[in-house]
Length: 147
Image (tube, rainbow, N blue to C red; front, top):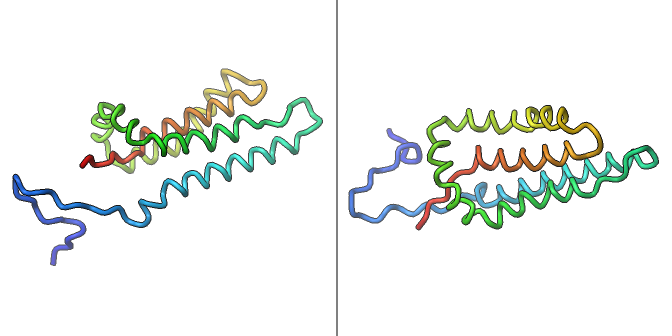
């Protein structure tokens, strides 16, 4: 027996396409990303507070960047999707597991590059956070179907 979830029935030309309601996981996924970003930002704040009294001050900007970029991408996702349609067309030629693997490796590679360019202060961490969030968004974002 053919599983209808894996192989949906074909739609005849001219007939309305079947509507797909987002699943519960798809509805809560943006919140999970924001919660994880906030947790990473909080841990980074705690780490920089441990170094009070040394040469480095407490870093407040990096945690704000780590939280606000995903929130901004979530809020403006429809407008960003329209701007990135040409990028999505090229990106969709590659299998999704490869894109996810590249998104997971991206922060490490960007961290190496940013740390080699700027070694003092928290500048490398900020640039790595910003570029990693944007890069992972470009690599893993599922295009929303327009009605």
